[in-house]
Amino acid sequence: MAAIACCFLAAALPHVAVAQALASYSIAGDGIAESLTGQPGDAVRGRALVADRSSTCILCHAAPLPEVRFQGDLAPNLAGVGSRWSVPQLRLRLVDASKFKSDTIMPSYYRADGLTRVGRNWQGKPILGAEQIEDIVAYLATLRD
Picture 1 (cartoon, helix red, strand yellow):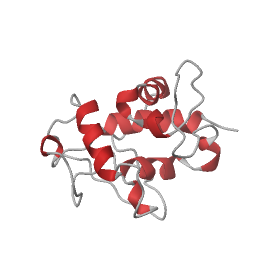
Picture 2 (spheres, rainbow, N blue to C red; picture 1 turned 45 degrees about the horizontal axis):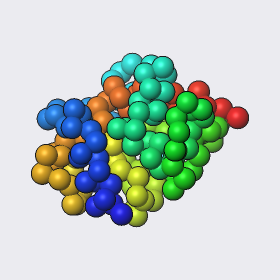
Picture 3 (cartoon, one colour; picture 1 turned 180 degrees about the vertical axis):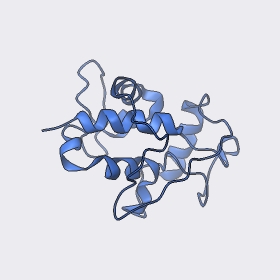
């Protein structure tokens, strides 16, 4: 399943696969407290990223995006996720979901090391940039019960 996700991601997000230095971050407990960019993300841009199939979010998750048809059901629904997890927890889940569950099918969106079965064009590169991670975190944090 992970190999399929990696292959799909490589095909779906060619505009993101650019060499860039990853921002340093520290994991404290079950989250990353500090923004990867030093600034809060933009929830409007984050919503657009989640709704865009190329980000892959809605391929596995359903979200409160009534305009988007055929949302996923392989992963938890994102409705209310901002009530279930804090901003630092959301950030870590996007950066490296394997910190919560080692065999997760969710890609590590902001990690480039220690991965297996990564397409040649994606080796050493994150799926999403730091700003995109922060924008998605900002949007997810607005999804409250």
